[in-house]
Length: 497
Image 1 (cartoon, rainbow, N blue to C red):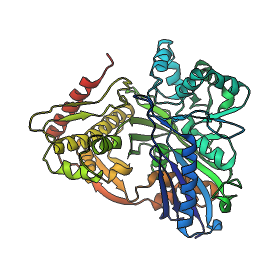
Image 2 (image 1 turned 30 degrees about the horizontal axis):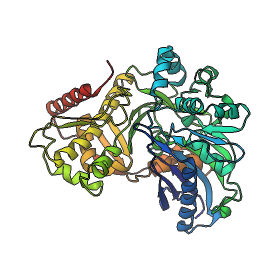
Image 3 (image 1 turned 135 degrees about the horizontal axis):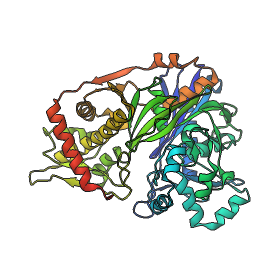
Image 4 (image 1 turned 120 degrees about the horizontal axis):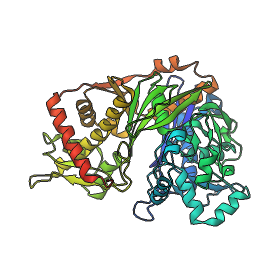
C-alpha cells in the first residue's frame, strides 16, 4: 500500500509504533511498556537505552504486522514525551545517566535559585516558559552538578544531549537534531529567533556544544541507517517529521486555524490553543510555546499543563486497589449521582498551570462518613475536568476569544462520563476524534507533508473525523457551585503564599 507512514510515539509509559495508510487509517500497531524508576520521593527516571530499544522493537513489530513491503513505507515520523533530558556518549552511543523525566521534581531548588537571581522575566521573555522543574534545562544542570566529570567530558566534545526526540532520531539516523516544538520546552531556546539562547545556556551551565541543531517539524532529518538490529530491511527510509507529543496532537486534531484548541487526556492533561504567528504572552501563567514550523511558517501556541490526570486513575487502581481496570472507574463514578461534596486535588508532583506550585501535594477534602469508593472515583474523574477547565478559562482571559469547541484525544478521553462532565463544566461542546491516535497521526502527517504524501493541511483536514460531540447539560448555577468548590479545594492545597 504505497503512501504508508510509520509514526513512532515514545511516551512516558510506553513506546509505540503505528502504521498509517495514506488515508489516515491504522494498519497495525505495536506497543511496549516503559519501566518507571523512582529513586527518591518526587524523582522520576527512565533508562534511555530502554526507550530506544522498545521504540526499535515496536517499529520492527508494527511493520511486520502490517504485511507491507519496505517500498510501501514513504516516511517515518516521531512524537515523544517532552522535557525529559537525555545525555549520552558520542562515541559509544550509550547514555551516561538515566533520563530525568518531565515529571521529576528534583531540580526545584535550582529553580528557586534562578528565581532569586531575578531570571524569571528574562526566561519568560525569551522562552515563553515559567521557571519550573518541569522543563529540561535544569535537569541538564543537575546532571552536570551531580557528576562534575560529565562537564569535563562535555567540554571535550565527548557528550551529546537532548530531549527524547533527539535521542531517537540520533539512534535511527546518526543526525543530532531537535525540532522547534521540543526545543521550545527546554528553557534554553529563544522562541522568537528559533535558536539556542547563549545567556540561558551560560546561566544554567549547560554547554552549548552538547545541544542538537534546531530544525523544522517537517523536513528530512536523515534516513534510517543500515545495521540496526531488527530494522535492516527498513534502511534508507526517510525520517522527516517530528513534534513533541502535545504539539503533534494539536496537528493531528487539524487545529490549523488560529483560536482552535485541543486537550489530550494522558498521564497528564495538556491543553493547547493555536495562536497563529503571534506569541501571546499570558497574564494567567500559561506558557507560550512553538506549535510547529512547516514550510517556513512558525505557528505558536498557548499551553497549560496538568501534571496528573490519567495517573490519578492509575493511583486508584494500583495504589489503592479500588478496581482492576481503568474503565471500572467510570462504572463506579456513574453509580452515584454526584461526588457527595468530595473534591480531590491530585498534586502528586506539584501543580502545573495556572498555579505553578512545585511544593503542593495531593489533597482530598469534603469527606463524610457516607463517602464511598464510588464517590472517590467520581471525584477523581471530575478533578481532571476541573483542572482542564481552569486552563481553558485562562486562555479565554488571555486571548479575549469566545471558545465554542474543545477537541479531545488521549487514552482517558474514552470516558464518556468525564467528557460529558468536561462539557458541562466548560459550557462548550467537547468533540472527540474518531481516532484516539491523534498524537501519532500528527507525527505521521508532518512526515507525510515532507515526503510529498500530502499536498497541504487542507488535505489533512479532509481526513479528520468526529466520533462524538458532548453538549453541556447543566445550568449556570450548578456550574458555578461546582467551580467554587474546586477553587476552595485548590486553595487548601497550595504551598505558595
